[in-house]
Structure formats: C-alpha cells, structure tokens
Length: 260
Image (cartoon, rainbow, N blue to C red; front, side, top):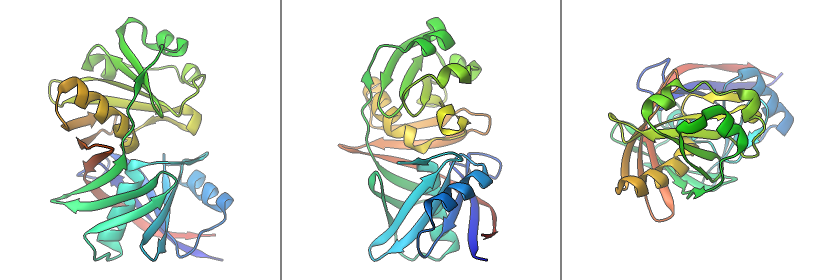
C-alpha cells in the first residue's frame, strides 16, 4: 500500500470556507494517469493538482473529477501555497512546467502572484443555448478557451440560474458571465458542466481572458475583480504584453494522507 500526502487549500480566500478549494498532492514521481484521475474523482473538488520536482522547478498537472485540464489557476495557487508554507520552499519564485508552458508564482505582500499566458477573447456570434438561457440581458459574446458572455449589469450576473443541460450543448470548455461592478472593476461567474463542474467557485484561468477584455473596456491594466459564486473570491489582475498577473490569497483547510 502506497501513502501520499494530500492538502486541501482554499484558494483566492482569506478565510476557510471561502474561495475555491483545491486538493494538492506532492509527488516524487508521476502516478499512472488513471490513478490520478481516480484520486481527483474521489476528492470531488473542481481540481486536484499533482506536482513532481525537476532540476529547475516543478512539473504540474491538474484533474477535475472527470478529465485532465491544460490550465488551472486556483490549484496552481494552492500548490504554491503548499510549497511555500508547508514544504519549506526557500526561493522567492516558483516555476511550474505545464501543458500551457511555464507558469511562475511568487509571494507579494500577503498574496500569491501567478504569471499566466494571456488569452484575448474575440467577438463571436452568440450560441443559441446562451441566448436561450440569458435572453436580452446579453450585451456581447466573445470566445477564447471559454465563451465570455457580457451581461447588462451586476445583478444579472448575481441572479443568473443557467440550465446546465443547455450549457452542455456548447463546444468550449465553459461559460463565463461577467459585468461591470460598482464595488469592483468587474464581477464574474464560471460554469463548466462538460468538465464535471456545474459552477466553479473561483476560476483563476478565466481571468487570463477576462482581464484583457476589461482592461480594454475600462482603459487600465490593473484590475480588482470578484467571482461572485456562493463562496466567492477576490482576484487582482494586471495585464502585460503577452501575460496576465493574477493574484489572490490562500489558506490551509486540511492536510492528511491517501492510501492507494
């Protein structure tokens, strides 16, 4: 019987029971893919991250309860928290190698700053399921890795109750709904039922698309946002030439052992 360490971190959160919970499993060598997928399904969180040390940093992979994904923000932040706060990493910057290239994380004040590739969403025709769900409150629809659906106001985002059966008809990873906010620069919510996640509490990777869009709309590169899920989480963004800085807090919820 093998024994693995496991941590559960609330990412993009200052207190437990907020933000997005991610499981993190530090490894010395990779497990079989099907074992990692089964662990992620057993955890039943939106993401479980696994990382393995390399000479110049760490390799990282992420699994939802049903599939492996190419990029995940909150589980990367959670992995950095585990390395910095629990495993004694002494450097000032972590570098993770992933299917989306090199991703760095550094501590900045009391937050963790992720450096991710920027995605510029482009306008597209509004898919029929999105029109059926949100109707005339849709102001604009764009696409990158996800559909970005801009709604008329913050209340439309907060009050949305989308039909997951209709969302499953869409061909991209997920759907982000967003609007300008009176308190923050913008708010958002994220849905990915085809990936086993009806609504994700805080989706770091979505801000690689949202930040460039809102930076252009609002005319500034530094933004303060909130993903207004039931748990909720604050995100600070800065848009660079080809990258996006995504920053947030994190806190330990549990640590334990897995027996396989």
